[in-house]
Length: 445
Image (cartoon, rainbow, N blue to C red; front, side, top):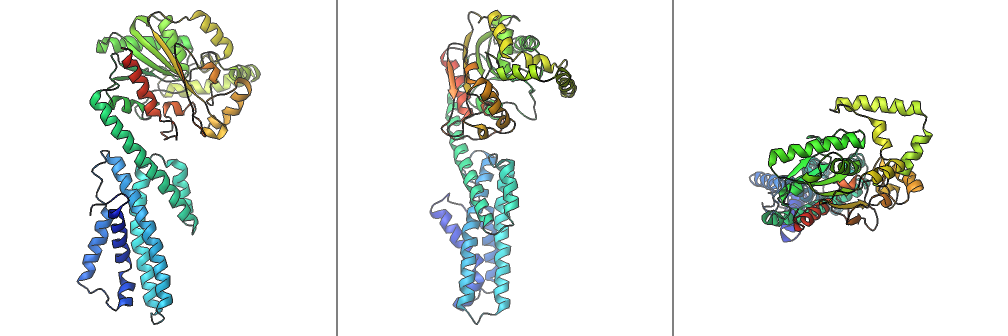
């Protein structure tokens, strides 16, 4: 049976389900118990309503399944409350009804509502991105506590309904942009990650951003440099990667979008490693161009043996994920305010390359997820307003600077690369990068 999202079709489904689930007490009350031939029809209708045909307006299979799960949970909530209320009134209004009949209807109610609930909940748990681990765990724990479980379910429904609505709008917008090739820049886009991460086919550092850009016509490549190395070493790696892309595609140049330390690495690649003629633009995101004073403070106060111990273990672990010559301490020291000041003196912008930058700011510690919620107060003490790792004052570079912020939550260092795949009210990370790409295209890059 085809559904309606929230209008007459949905109300009709809810009414039919309520009638089916309560057909036994209704039949007793009205003196017309369902006859044997009718029972299979009611059963088939119940399971047909449980199937919930997908909304043809939703092009994504994941979203279609999520929307069906949300619909089933809404139907469960309505019919379960209606069924429980009706059962109580039925027992109170029919003193002739025997206890076995009342118990039978209660068991039937639990069985049918359980089918409806788990059908919806499994779909939601398997397909929702925005629920995250927290609400999945809370939902499982609260499910066994009366009344609290209704509160948890209402929260889950609120989150997932917003996810469906937001993602559908997002897909509709990207379909239009795909037809117009809105993000098809003249030169391909090279995404360069920050420190302590690697480009991976299993866990994309940039979250949903690359796929979103590709849908709208962009050609996207990755830097692929080591997770931790000096700016000079990482810059040399990126310069080699740029040469590979140019040779492979014949594109002549690339547009670089670099996050965090990756922005410093790319500036080095352009100015010192011979990549200037192959770079049309550099957009840095949350890059500490003027360094991190808190990092310098920590490195000067933490005993050297402790630093070497941490570095040795990090470098050993980094080799396991593909780093050839990781250097934890060199990477961290190159992010300090002193090193960045010296770097800026010796690394002027290359003529012919368009430089611009962007950043973000958290409003308070809880605005970011672990570990940024812990580092935010430390960075604020020594560097002022920040995104959890980099101060706002250190981020601007080039002809243009854009600061991403929201009224309440703020936007963290990780949010700027969609690290948690979270839809943040007031900030759409995929829209941000599509706007960057469209801006580059408009400039002829």
